Structure formats: structure tokens, C-alpha cells
Amino acid sequence: MKSKLAGLVMAALLLLYLVVVAQYAFVLFGTGQPVAQAMGAALLVLPLIGAWALAVELVFAFRAERLLGLLRAEGGLPVDDLPRLPSGRPDPAAADAQFPVYQAEVEQSPDSWRAWFRLSLAYDASGDRKRARWAMRESIRLERARSRG
Image 1 (cartoon, rainbow, N blue to C red):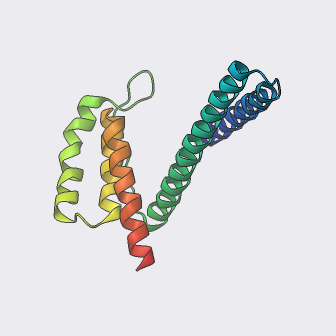
Image 2 (cartoon, helix red, strand yellow):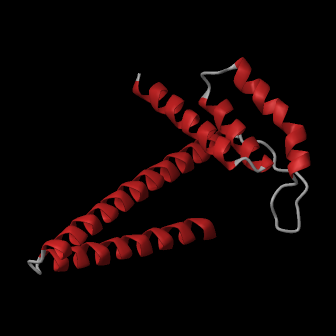
């Protein structure tokens, strides 16, 4: 729950920042000076990119959270019994030892969003955040395709 609250606070702060930058951009537009107007245009582009990135990340987080809830309700989440480092993160060596189980599950059922979700958790436990996000995106894509048709 703490991480959700922290994420929402960060999103709110970023949104506030984007609004302030956009307001400043409009102030620069109103000066009538070409250089200031060009700077204002550039400042408008940054909030648009920031708002888009924020929206994409929030949609990803909400979709992943929904799948987590579905898998939890089914009893399909893997048991989290990995030894922990002093930081609280799973021991990467222990996580790497369990990884082949989840990789084999995806190889046996490549169209299973559940298998891809568990693989994402395995990547995350091993410390590979980039591949964890990639596997989670695949899980979300598969579940959405299944829900639509």
C-alpha cells in the first residue's frame, strides 16, 4: 500500500510540475518577443511528453495491479519464500535458481498471461527490471486479447 501511495504522490507532483511549466509557457507566448515565444513553444512540448509518459505508466501500473488481483484470487501467485538481502530485495542467486521453472512454464504455454505474469515476477526477483516489464507487458497484452475475443 505504501508503494501505491508513493506512486500516486509522485504522479500528483509531476502533474503539478507539468501545469506550472505549461503556465509559464503561455506567459512566454504573451510577451510578443519571438525568442520568448519560441521558448514557450519548447516548454509546451515538454509537458505534453511528460503527461503522455505519466499516462502510459499509470495505465501500465493499473493493468498490472488488476492482473495481480486476478492471479491472487485464483491462488496462482508463486510462493515468495526466497531469502532476502539486508535491503529486503530477494537474493538474486536464489531467484536465479528458481527462474528456469517460470521460463519453462512460458515455453510450455506461450499464450498464457498467467505464465508470463509469473515470469515477470521471476525476472524482477532476479533483478532484471527491464525484462520484468517486458514480460508484464506481454502478460497484459495476452490477457486483454483473451478478454476481447
